[in-house]
Length: 584
Ligand code: ARG
Image 1 (cartoon, rainbow, N blue to C red):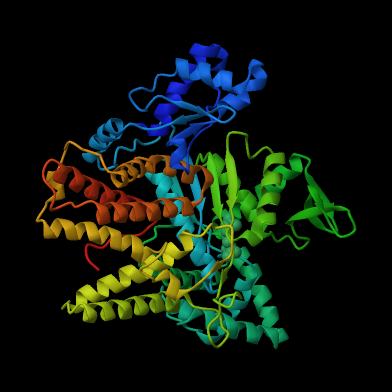
Image 2 (tube, rainbow, N blue to C red; image 1 turned 45 degrees about the vertical axis):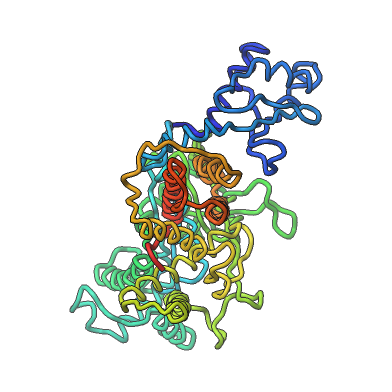
């Protein structure tokens, strides 16, 4: 089934051709849902934009259009408002039949895209031996949600973790590893060096006050790059250790990622330089190989170079990203490449994309986009820190959310005089805690900074995970109370008579439009807003319309509305990486 919006758009195309001729077949009807019920459910604004090409008044155009428009199955007769807006109000019978059609469908009637693409989502991407910080957490959560939506739509999504696993810092780390664990390299293929972050700090201290150690570090860089076996082994031990730590976070967040770190592209870097040279883009500047950027100037107003290869032969972050971009297009066959990386790297990506375009590696039919996000702030509006002023470890942050969720739950259990098993409490606390962290992040427009507040994210009121999870639980409660097996309800007749029922029905049927929007604009907060409104509309309906106590056939019809609300919440939340609970 195609979305209501698409069905209406189709009718508009037909009407455009009938009224004004074939050349108007692909005119955009500029059709959008209205925010105000006064204007119906959808409004089309095309009459205004056609005034010029048709040399007619918008109202006259609108009149001709609605004469040719056949939407009588879907809507009441269209109305013209203001200068020439066309307002459309959906008929209850149409909504009823649409809801009836989606009842039996796992995908709630949402067809996969007819144009599947190969899409790379580059997200999470922490750095080996460094802290995986809240910025990476944001990238992980937002990237996962974007990937899930695109996967649901039927795209072939490559979830790539562009881990920072290469670079000169490894010289220092390896030198230090060889010093403190001299036997490590001959012994094990796994080594527990504990907290890699403090290992990094210790290595750095060592590096900063010993010039001989610095020399060793530099030697190790050379050895690593030339493929020396022992040095490679040390590098691998360090990467494995980090990888295990990262994986714990990914498991807890239920996020799938395929690691393809910076080191993966090493062998491709010389070719990047060579091809840029052959393409006439490379200029030597103070011994370094550079591309001079268009539209970027340094302080003296001169064109700014992007260094591709340093004078010592080393490569940069940007060089690796150029190699990666090319690989993803040529080898993976990606036609869309999405980088979920903090807003601070906007310039980096703009420059990489520019060079790739000029080199002919980024053809017109491929979209490379940086999906930026803002900072995570503490409640004081400053960068998120612990009380002691240190960076917050992700594990601690997740633990804290779960602990608080557990305390809230215990308070509720006591107040309601329920008795629950420890397993139940653990499962709900973990579920609510993690979901709250995810949802708090996703529900913000990602481009703004976001204030991290446990109190807000765990509240049962407002646009929060607990509020949405609770709406779902409420429906499951109805089924338990009425001993109803929702799965047995199929193909039931729906009757929409109350305002709240109609509002809920319309909302239920607009999920696929929202998903299209999220996939297009890569803003998961749209889906959050949709689900929040769905919960509100469900609660309004349920507060005003008796369900279990009402006579048939209304009873079944309302039960179906409850079930569809729950299933829509479950599906929508799953696309945000959030799993519903049956009770909480
Ligand atoms: N490792 C980088 C960082 O922590 C992020 C990498 C993002 N992806 C990329 N293709 N550059 O800042």
